[in-house]
Image (cartoon, rainbow, N blue to C red; front, side, top):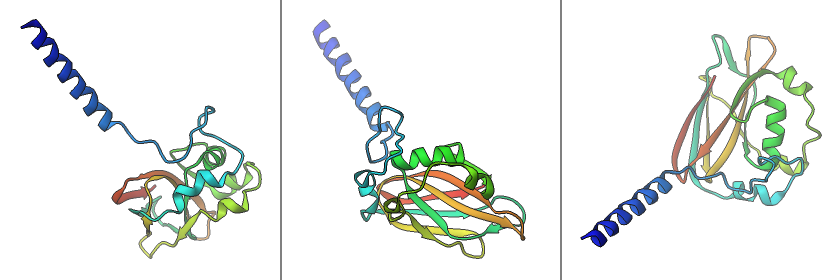
Length: 174
């Protein structure tokens, strides 16, 4: 009787551990270095995943404040050790930011690799501040959108998003 109880307890424990493991978040594609995943060196291998076609979509809109509207193209940058380093230094966060464009431009992270720019996707907002990126692979991305109120200085909105293998991710930049 005790052996059967032990087997049942072990089986239930194993099922519980498997269920918890299935719920664990998947890391973004690409290597994460021991230094927290930051690198000053561009590596095309780190970006390769982002050029693959996928089934994910990012549907977004800007909603910074009254009277603010999109003031240029919306950029979508793959999350890699190189871009994490750049974005942390430019925006002070890897999650989200809203900073005056002049402040972002004043921060130094070195010259961007010309190769890096080839992996950045861009689109434009419609009159309601909505934008969309289609056919994305699964992974981490940084969205950058400048907004402006009248003729005032642009504010750059940044947000990190994670796409899954299917479906749309909705995001509001505010």
